[in-house]
View 1: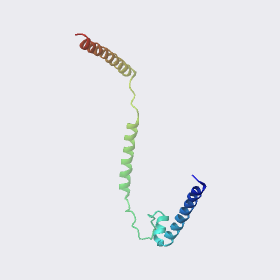
View 2: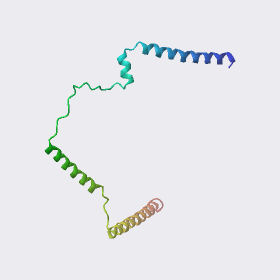
View 3: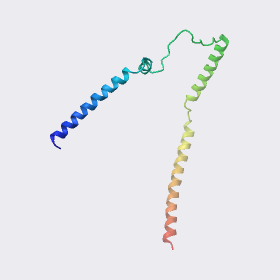
View 4: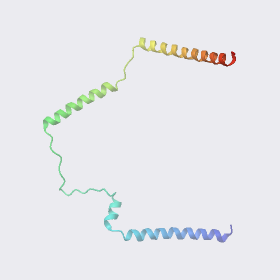
Amino acid sequence: MNSGGFSKQFVGGIMALVMGIVTIIRMTSSMPRKITEAAFYGGNSVYYDGSMMKAPAISNNEYMAMMKRMAELEEKVTVLSVKPVMPPEKEEMLNNALTRVSTLEQELGATKKVLVMLLYFGK
C-alpha cells in the first residue's frame, strides 16, 4: 500500500467522524423540546400535580388481621427452613444400604461382562 492510500483512509475517517457529529447536532436541534426532555429524564418521569388519588385507609381490624397472617407465615417459613436432623442410627443404616447397593451394582456389572463374553465367545 502506498502512502497516498493511507492518507486517503485517514482523511475519510476524519470526515466521517465530523459529518456524524454535525448530523447529530442538526437532528437534536430540530427535535421538539418535550421529546428531548423525555429522553433525558428517562421518558417515564411522573410529576405530582396534587390530583393523584390517595390509597384507601385501612382499618385497625384489617391491619391487625394482616399482621396476624404475616406472623403465621413467618412461623411457617422458620419451620420449613430448619434442616431436619437424622438420628445417627438411621444415618448409619442408610450408609450401609448405599454401600450394599454399590457392591451389588459392581457384581451386576461383572456378571453382565461374563454373560456377554459367554454369548460371543462361548459358541
